[in-house]
Amino acid sequence: MLILISDAFDASLPGILSRFGEVTDDKSRLADAEIVLIRSKTKVTREYIDSAPRLRYVIRGGVGLDNVDVAYARTKGIKVDNTADASTTAVAELAFALMIALPNHIAAADASMRQGKWLKNELKRTELYGKTLGILGIGRIGLSLAVRARAFQMRVLGWHPDVYFTDFAEICPTMEEVLERSDYVSLHMPLVDSTRGIINKETLKRFKDGAYLINTGRGKCIVEQDVVDALKSGKLRGYATDVWNSDPPENSPLLGAPNTILTPHIGASTKENMIRIGIIVERLIEDYTAKK
Ligand code: NAD
Image 1: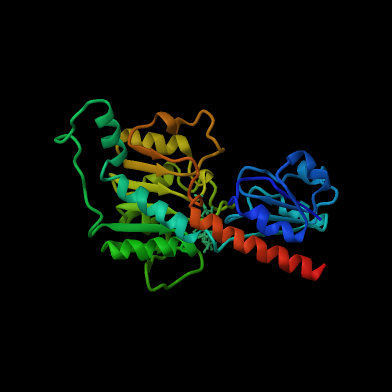
Image 2: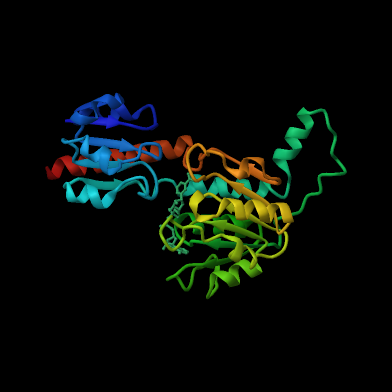
């Protein structure tokens, strides 16, 4: 059995998986691979699947399967799984880091010091304490962020199509209510038809003036140009994003927008998470081989 590791995983993984068969990172051997391990970079499209006649199992190290044509894979009898539980802490910590970096101007302060500037009077900070955080998508990561925000004595609101109560966030009946009451809005929904472009010029009107938006969910959940316009008008005081329309972004207007903090899709990239993902991948392959 050939296992192709197509994207970046922990360096220990090839050794761990070698008990199941041959492990390679040589993508030119896709045609011989029975199992392919991917993260975000490899796109398992119809063409990809058609060029892999021996493929029986695709495992995505991460949350979501939006880079896999799952429906087509199923028609070919290919099993598809992810490691959805592993990344919760890693992404929640990045979302929190971005939320605290925005009103403290950490990135701008650092850049200004390197330029020989002393902006002690210009860089006015605000505190998270007592502010309201609105979380769209109260799932694993959203709830994990809520717990952290509560520790900083923020008020936490959430909206979710079918969650009505949690211990950590007050669930509002509509997304608009969350937007209207929040000083910070953090996105944690999957990319599906109903969430594509959900933050756009119409929904941005519902935000508080001067609110902050944090996106560690999916880049396509926002309309980039509408967010840029909101930053320029001051409707949004800041936008921090880890996620993009494409990895890396191509001609994104966000790259030249004011009051942003931009990271290269590193939400899941902690050492600890890579080890957790490896453990789950090993268990999934163990299960797969046991049922063969
Ligand atoms: P999850 O499935 O536990 O939570 C997502 C929640 O959003 C679910 O409860 C779902 O029911 C809810 N939801 C679905 N449609 C919605 C809608 N229209 N409005 C509001 N909520 C809706 O997933 P999770 O583990 O918390 O991950 C959330 C998202 O984070 C993933 O789908 C992925 O897009 C993103 N993510 C990003 C990174 C990164 O590197 N930045 C890493 C992992 C996950």
